[in-house]
Image 1 (spheres, rainbow, N blue to C red):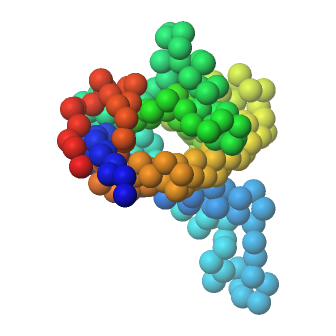
Image 2 (cartoon, rainbow, N blue to C red):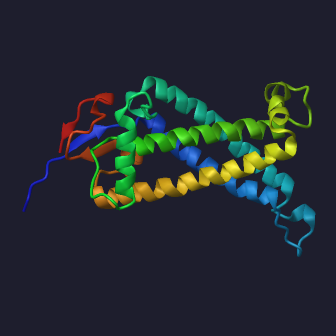
Image 3 (tube, helix red, strand yellow):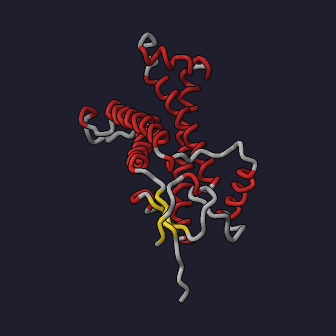
Length: 232
């Protein structure tokens, strides 16, 4: 029997873990309610006043989830500032970042047996950066439509320019809709990569979102970003 020694790295703060799950639930609620707003479902056997799928109710749920998501994102940014392990943005100014990203991508596509060890590999960092860009687009387009009825409000003043830039409320809706699908594609890829990494590399990828730690046999290239590891 070969004894394998792994180092325990504390990576994710309680701040990140809590708001990770809040944002995950919010995204799911917003996506489902958004689809129902786009194409409402009615129960013909019931009077409209008693139907649970009324557009007004669905819109209220959608807006509530949106506000929860925005608040969580703001607190997530605060966690990014105060916790070293929460800083997962790509190192686009470092030349080796791009070759490492290709290396990891080839591994996930089963074209390469392994890749260099990372606490957060460059492909994951790049995908998270893409997620935050899409989230920003969803926020500005969503608030632009939310405040469209009264452009004289603070919200209308802050986000009214979005409709002008995109050429009208319809195009704002289209961008908002397809960006939501982009976020769902990220979610699918994210779940696949997390499960795959746990089964094939055994580094505690999934459990890290509950206990904040990852287990690595070799020292990761980005180990300098977190506190020194403990040995298991």
